[in-house]
Image (tube, rainbow, N blue to C red; front, side, top):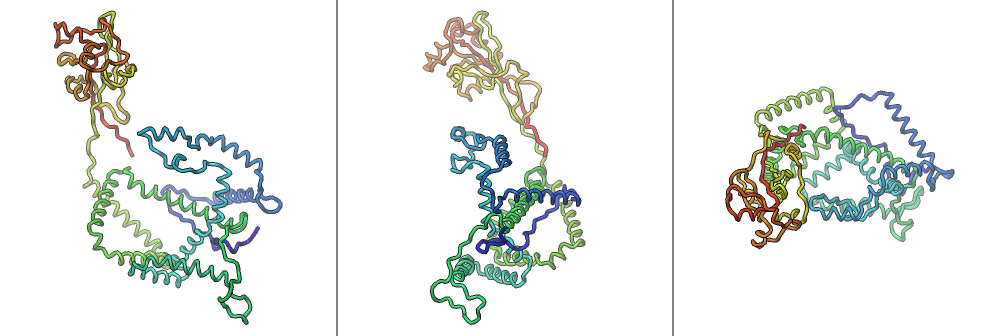
Length: 495
């Protein structure tokens, strides 16, 4: 196994420290648990090293275990579920209410999930990711005062940029010159080594080939150093993610509506104040003080003082007192006693005229009036609904407010609101709205509904307000309906 690769950029220093944030649900880790974790990691590393051939390089052919694992994963995660078919994308684009996935192959031409491709991309990424960990390690050394002269130099440059912000575009140019161009030139014109008789001279033709950053070879020490830092970075991200869910999300997701409402009002006021008075704030001084404060806090001596047991206990006491005062303020000033939302739902009782008995037969309770010129009626579709009143359910997320349904006596209003045509309204009695016969509808210039049956025996009885009229008998159609209403209340969900 190779030790180092000089052309590669790798963090060859100590491992990057892992972030540890105390949780409310942390359980004490026993030495036995730690030992079991170490043994498990050693077994995994041993199994990984065992996949080398006799020359110390990875095997090109898949072993039986790898092929068996690939077969199991292909059964657990079928390609049909991972791939985005064109039909699914087209249906998603056609449906107006569906949410489009911008990661779909309809928008981005990228390969689907594949275990061999995943393994190859991980190896390529791990061989080239050392520059990120090296930069991370240098920043940690800088802000922890490992070299005080480097930290003080950084503070001097930072202070200059805060006081003269127009020099900020110069920073990347200087970095490109002194950290990229100059080392590349020195690599092509190396100074003589171990020969004091020859002085360094940068004139003349180049003495060495141009330098290029090469990825670390697989199974080298640098490769495993990158894996070590990558594993620690994944742990850092998971720790920060869980800490945000535990300490930030409960205050912002309105699980406690009083606290979240107070924070919303405070952020809104601060946003308005920043929008109006942001030009009078000395941002250069603020950035200068904030940068110096954050850097000084990272000093080891400052860490000892700040993280001492006495200071931590005092800080905890002050935080508890502040929380109590905040809770009292929220309970006194933030009022969330508004009643739940209420609305009115409707259902239409639909009846059909029976030809042989010359009576109206109860048919269904429908969510729509099934009017003569409605799209389902024109398409010849039958009405859909429930046969009994008790089977009518409240909308999802709502509960019934009253115990009974109420008949809508203003039948003319809901007919006019829906612009229903081809019907006859009963303004007294049971408030039925009748279909008009096909002959009357054709005489009014309206199209005849498809599927509507014609015949003299399909005319309904007389209405109460046209009783005794000979014309009324000729105007009845096949269906009649009336509207029932009931109040619902939105169902609350606890946090």
